[in-house]
Image (cartoon, rainbow, N blue to C red; front, side, top):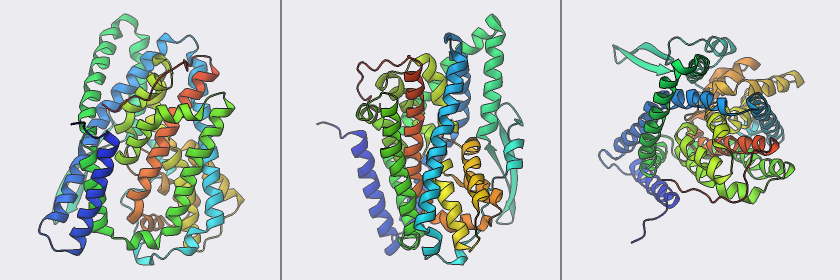
Length: 423
């Protein structure tokens, strides 16, 4: 008997999760709601557990890979230039849609939903975050919960990138003395990628549980109340994914049909997993084997893109969300405010972790504009639904930029290639 494709497994899991969420919300079945919540949280915890070792080893390996490139400086500069170009286009689309559709003026959500988020971004935190607190960027925090102090560990992806870049450069510069470390790092990266593939296989279960838990917690009322906002975000995502990206491919002499045929497994996985980090191995596979980008360059570009290239989370979404909050609170925005949104989106993408959610980037944008941070709380109810589309666009951009840069540098081997399967 032929096993259903991974995509079919995921969509079946989503359908079952939505059904179970509806049943748990409307019928008192003991333990069903808690079961959905616990399974979903466990899936996210598994992904988070792999972020630190995977990002660290991938970035170090990407720095080492640059040794094999004669034009490394041009490739690095071209990569970050196209990061900025695509982010600029995406945020511009978000601003136009937010201005035309006026989602904040048509919101049915009540002011009671405006809750200041526990996590907020600011430029001071962003700049301070560039300096790692330790090698793995781990931080301990203590908070009161149920009358007792609880300590938890968290990590800062931006600090982790900085530390990994510094260690990778140092390992390359010391020559032979760094060779054993780089070899160990390459082995560790292969091991963590294999573990991640095992976790990815749980995506149908995890995604179904997360969607079911969201239905239990928020119901359908939140989506209907924020319908105009959700529509604006998804129109923006669709324009970038199916209009802007194909036009950029055509402008650079590449086939959109071939790009989507090769990149679709990664885009699909990004949609259901809501994590660029979880999608990283598949993205690398489609970029190298599907699009023909040399491994020596892809090993640098894709890990960096997976942690800093976020057209969905850091460009389209914060632009529309910022306009939503301004419109909801009747705060007029001027040309300088629109310019600030563009600058934040182009420069602040690194503040958005390659995992789920875009809260840090949104609060960074709101704080820069002087808008109430409580406005972010208005949008949290439908964030999981939006995050699926945002991550799909993120992943598509993370595959697009290396392909364009490789093409412009004459490195792309586009003679064949089929879409790799998710293994």
